Amino acid sequence: MTFLLPAALAALVLVGLPVAIHLLRREETREESFPALRYLLSDLRVRQRRLRLREQILLALRVTAVLAAVLAAARWVMPVGSGHLPPADVVIVLENGIVSGAVVDGRRILDDQRALAAELLDRLGDHDRVWVMPTAPADTPVFPLTRSEAVMALESVEPVAEPVVETGPPAPGPGASVERAVERARALLAVRPAALQRVVVVRSDGARIPEDGSVPAPGVLELDPGVDMPENRGITAVEVNGGLVPRAGEPVTVDVQLRASPPGGSDVAADVPVRLVVGGETVAAGRTDAEGRVRLTLAPLQEGSISGWVEIDPDALRLDDRVALAFRVVPPPTVRVLGDPGRWTRLALATLDEGGRIRMAAGPVPPGRIRSEIEPLPPLPAGSALLVTEDLVVALPPADPSLAAGLDPWIEALTPEGARGRIRLAEPSAPGTFLEVSGVQGLPTAMVGTEIHRRYRLAGGGPEGGVRVLAHLLDGTPWILEVGPGVSDPGDAAGRAPDRWTLRVLGSPLDPAWGDLPTSAAMVPALERLLLPGAGATDPGGPASAGVAPLPPSPVVSAGPPPPGWSREVLVERRGREGGPFLAWLLFVILCTEGWLAAGPRAGNRPDHETSTPP
Image (tube, rainbow, N blue to C red; front, top):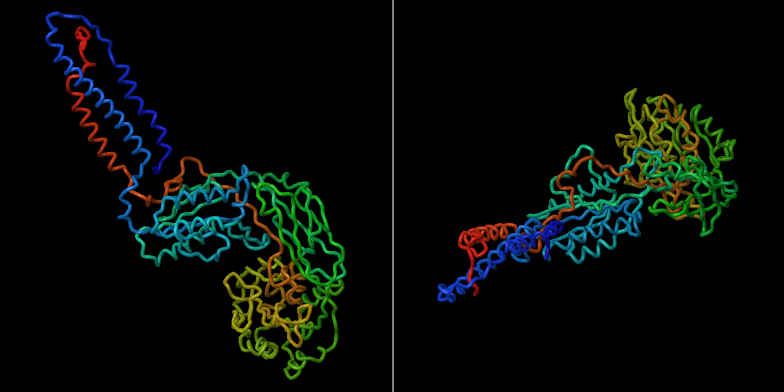
């Protein structure tokens, strides 16, 4: 039997109430023999049997009335009549973020989520279609499934900790990932012809009821296992070498930041052992300070790619106790400056040269394809410059917009043939325009949020022709474009391809009048990364974010009863017809019959002065 509100079955104890009343109202009769009535004994026996039968029928009707009321309150679903319902389309959005991997009382929260989803699947019919859509990764392909296939799909979903850059713009929280999945689910259902369509969100982060008491969007049902997240500590950020590229033959530092969740438990992140593992061996260890920070130091390393992880002792939430780490150790590049890069660029280059981060070289570019391409060109326009290494050219535009056209021939000549004509400097934005760098790839995260007052529009930015956007502004316009082979193309062991180079074009001169980068702490590490193709990537095979993990969110719980739709009520019953109308009609018939029978003579309602003869 199926019930939509099984808790109401506790009222079944009331079934015994009519029986108890019937037994308590039974009266003991006095038996006396009257000779004058001995001829009526046979008639009295027949009448007594009828009265007893009436009493038993009344008792049965009253018990049945109580039972029908309880079944109606429990929303009994009769396993008949479901064939008239059209097929339903249901999308189960399973929130499998970092919180779903927490272990509470020996069970993962994800296991409780699966149980909720399985309870829903058990109430669907064989002709209904289900999509199981995890929130992470956001682009996970989904397909229409039957009930049995959906159960197997649920078992295949695992918790995922999506990296977030803590120093960047505010990362979208779990609520944002659920909203994206719901929008995707709605778009999927919009092209389906089913009459009944629902999106079911199975959450993992506690009773996330908004403070304003708002209800879920129409057509969306939210289910929540209601598990309280225990106190947790996790790794929130890992920074290699203070943001500078590790150099061969020099010690490398790894800064680790821990934080407690929920906020306010900072002592949980203090004095925690932290280990750095490379190649399966622990190469450095330390303990966090009162603020949850620790610096680990590696011995000088040789040129190449280093991968491993940073870990702490596991607690309830395991996914933030280990963070993968990968970086590239490179030798200092040799840099030549063509043209006038400006005062602030020269100071940054001198700082890198004195620190052994680069080697400044004077004189012309060595013979090769780069030199052959630039020799026939006219002189660089005043205020513009090229920073040239063995396999990289960084183009800095002039501060005077009237001279910008003079740099276009240099960009055209240094762009690979397949992408030529795709990058050029267009007119700059109006003075006083305020923009910010909103995203970078392979560059220091300190650049995020840098104010850019003016910039040239880099025409032709896009994936076509190998053009990549390394940094863009808040309005989506590219600010740093890159074109060339990249480190993943075939080359020698160091990732360099012979007779091939990468060209990077900036949208603003490195001048305080055009932006705040030249006077910020990000200037030196940003310029160093710009001079190293792919060296800013933490993944040896391509760009990636340094080891960074998100913290679980704090549950948002409002006072008072939850709004409608936030309960564990089932989406819709697909295996039969709800028996409420039938039970209401049955209850009406029972009450009418009971009233008719109770109106007649009853043996238990005789006055006290009457007596009965024995049968």
